[in-house]
Amino acid sequence: MRKGGRSAVTIRCVHVEGGEIQLQSRAEPIREAGQAIVEITRAGLSHLDAAIGQGRVDFTGVPGQEMVGRVTQVDSEQEEWKSARVVIDPLINCSQCRWCGAGLRSQCSDLRIIGRSGADGGLATHVVVPLTSLVRIPDHVDDDAAVFAVPVSRAIQAARQATIQGQTYVTIVGDNALALLTAQVLVRLNASVRVLGGHETLLDRCERWGIRHRRREEAGHRADQDIVVECTGERPAVAATLGFVRPRGTIIQMIAPRVVGDRGTTLDLQKLVDGEIRLIGSSFGPVREAVDLIATDQIDVVSLVGVRKRLEDVPGILSDPQLATGRKVLVTP
Ligand SMILES: [Zn+2]
Image 1 (cartoon, rainbow, N blue to C red):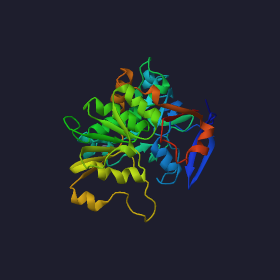
Image 2: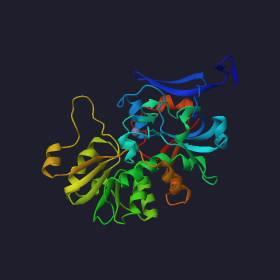
Image 3: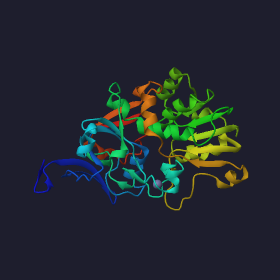
Image 4: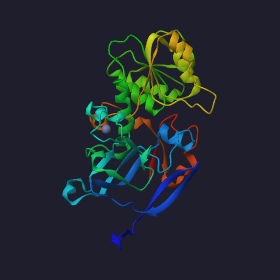
């Protein structure tokens, strides 16, 4: 409903600016042609949200890259999207640059990431996104499952960073939600994948999935792993990857290490040079494929649901160092 050109609807959102995290009420955002307004029904808190909350990632606006909702407004010629249940793909790319042309949309030269850079995210009651960001959710997939689509897309992307098949030793460092989703995606390519973690209950989950696992402190630093996928960003874990990986092996870094000020990197770069080790970053991936994996029960996401929070709880927990270290914290606006 609009009166005199201004929206009569107010929305609520978590706004981050200059180290302050606040719950705000504001007028419903203005939708432009080619955009949709989505009423958020579920959001997941990510490592990036935690990094933004802790001031480690520079961002002003509404965080949240993992969100599910229902379309409330679209262009009249796009009525088939009205009321659709959707996951939102956080990458907004131009489709025209040479990176997009090469199929590398995550590296678009004009890239914006919803809830990360250049666009407000899903820690809100409503969000405005391009129509091209909408991915339909099959009816039988509920919001709790669908909200895992973005972290599952990250796991799929990690699997594309190196040849996982046929390697003798592949280790995943971490047992948070992202690590265990990555383990489930990678084990489909290579049964020898093992997880190193610290939470007994989460390692038990690996047992039930038939994924090899050990407590991190029990793993030998034998420099024999072909591929190490680091999913924690924690300094000791990041530093330890060089003890696990073999010479000329590959480290895939899923979470930016927590490096503060001039304390330097957590990786011994001399070892990296001496061992001729490849270090690869991995970011967001194909959300549509992720929805398919979830919808066909090829990935267990339900057992990774952690505590539930309301939107008004988020300012109080976004800077918590424990956020995103275990099961997924879900937010219901
Ligand atoms: Zn582009």
